[in-house]
Structures are given as structure tokens and as C-alpha cells.
Image 1 (cartoon, helix red, strand yellow):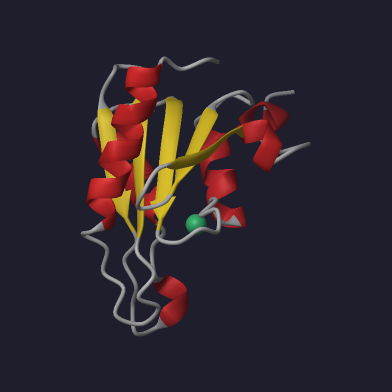
Image 2 (image 1 turned 60 degrees about the vertical axis):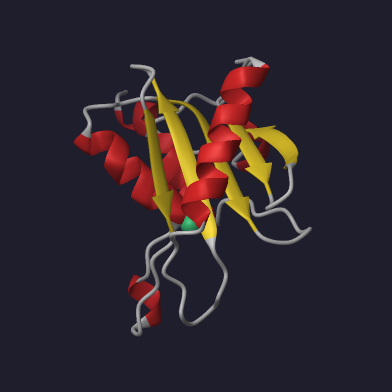
Length: 137
Ligand SMILES: [Zn+2]
């Protein structure tokens, strides 16, 4: 789906702001995420690391948890931000997490501390994906 500029910017700004809250004593790599759900509610999340590295949480996972707590069930669009010029695209696990609550054309807005860098669809980042409908046959 096509997002209007105001919604796109809102998502980017919310992700950028919450990025500052990240708990990243080990990697120092802050990530923020913001979701717009089907009820027009926004949900944000940041990454939260742990001394036992593998149990750290990604920003996208935190934002999805917030959406579920608030009774949202569908990601209309999501923004993910990180520092630097390289694209802070969702990790493989988060692409699948987003897939659970999205359609294939759900926009995924990627930005850094300065600007929106690129907008993908979920299908761009996770082609030929496996989702809930695979289990409904
Ligand atoms: Zn992730």
C-alpha cells in the first residue's frame, strides 16, 4: 500500500526518537522501531541487550509486543532506524516477525539519524515467505 507523506514522516520520527531509549551497553548500536496498526495507533520499541547476548530483544520485536498489548493485529506500516549510512534493515528473525502481522506490500521505512533512506515492502525483504495462511489449507 502507498503511505501518505505525513504518516511516513510520523513513523520515521517516532522510530528516531525511541532509538535514543535503546539499552545497548555491549554493541552501542541503537535501533528504534515504530508501527502504525489498523486502529491508527502507533507503537514504538527499541533494542534491549543482555549480558547473555542471544536473549537480547530487537526494536521491531519490542514494537510488535506493544501493538499486541494494545489489541492491534495488523501492521499497516513500520519504520526502523539506526545510526550510520548503512541501511538498518530488520534482521532475518524480525522480517519473519513482521510477516506474521503484515501483508506482502506493507511498507518498511528505513532511516538513519538524519533522514529516511529507503522504503521497502515486506516482499522486497522477505520474498517467497512462509506465513499464517500456509497453515490454513
Ligand atoms: Zn531483529
